[in-house]
Length: 322
Ligand SMILES: Cc1ncc(C[n+]2csc(CCOP(=O)(O)OP(=O)(O)O)c2C)c(N)n1
Ligand SMILES: [Mg+2]
Image (cartoon, rainbow, N blue to C red; front, side, top):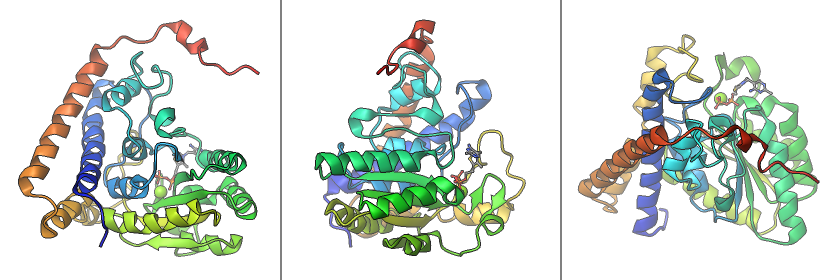
């Protein structure tokens, strides 16, 4: 059993609840035009993000993909700042210039979500090379979906990280779909973590990626291994997105039975039962967290709605010039 302080157990519950409530709320708000641009929800995949990130320090770095709200919240972004960013407002964490697929929080080690499928892998390898070169013991995680591992950039990045022994974990959330394409149409092998064999690095698998403790325990072991200078690793966890691929997807390629069977494996319900059964927390304590998060999200939406849009001149600020 994981040995964590009560505060840590509750922090994981809080983060999972924040991910759930932010995206459930956004799902309603997109119809009112609150979100600028397209967005992809993490509902159903909360345990994978929180379990993977819990052991990281603020100096450890993550890169994420188009479905990055979960990892962004798990890495500790301000919820009002994120809401304002999604709404394209000046008070957003990137001054309203990034939006859902370019969320970043450099102080906390979130180097950005990314709309280019497979676009984060090579950036993560570069950040890991920096850590090795500067002699830090920080590690990097590249988050992606299953389908992205069929991009050439995945294979080039994993190979380079392997031969250079870099401190990076390739963390794959296998939700069995790339937009509407079932994984069996795109990938011949049954388990993506076995791709590690081709590069001479360890591959790890968590069958129940909806179990935050199972993900945390596996990542605790892998993070220690990578931080100790043993080189990269691949971790694959199984999970499922409850909503369509993006706000533009009605999800006609999945049956209601399939979606319902995954909703029955709700990561938040599973974790609540774990905390109660192991006498770590009471229902009242968890209800209080749920209530606080619901209020926090309402307040964040209000903050975003009342904030101004940025001035045009902001587009030319923070541009890197050699
Ligand atoms: C290079 C590139 N190709 C295609 C797309 C369009 N696209 C966006 S998400 C996606 C599927 C990604 O699937 P997966 O990696 O499994 O992540 P998931 O959406 O399931 O979380 C595709 C093909 C893109 N954004 N970038
Ligand atoms: Mg997928």
